[in-house]
Image (cartoon, rainbow, N blue to C red; front, side):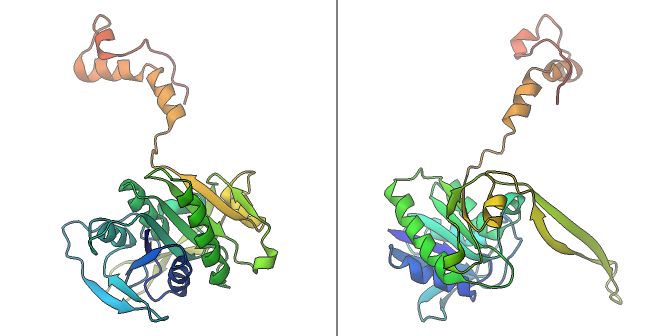
Length: 279
């Protein structure tokens, strides 16, 4: 089994080294990681841009590839044949700080796993809770064990798991919970900056985000000292709202306005009688 390991904190990150070391007990490990920190990069992919790739030696002496591309690019390089073999699974992390709820839309760590899922390669994104003490050893060992279980179960090609491990000593972790994404609360602030001859400059800053500790969510599980495992899929359709739209009469109104549809031919267009929108 070929395991592609990447991250968004950069190839120098201790979390990446600890993760690849732990995963060597599970399979052959290929490291392709960014040459810099891409925290908050989201699912950004370099299109029509030359990507530079270099062989590097990690702090433990193992070989790896570094690129000036994003975490998403790292996975694309691996899946599209950088080493002539397609990885069987992608593991992204270990991120410094949690990726909970809405964070997954910003996270380069999760974005790398999403790129794998898009290419029908199962993936795990793993992050370490807290923002100060980095206890990577336990998180790395847990990820290796989790990977064994997932791969033994013959996962769907696009399976994607977002994992958050408390930044606590192993003896204080309260267990494991499978969860749904919670609701993050951000307190961003726009701060003006004075830089002569640089035009109008601003920085987006603010306090660390928290979230609603609702039962069954990743946010509550991590707050309780539990490892959170959240399965994610890429269908972003709001199905309840879609159903409301389909029965609201909006289609009929738009067909009348845009295509001159009449009551006699609305049926051929697949429309229904108008109703008061309920959203």
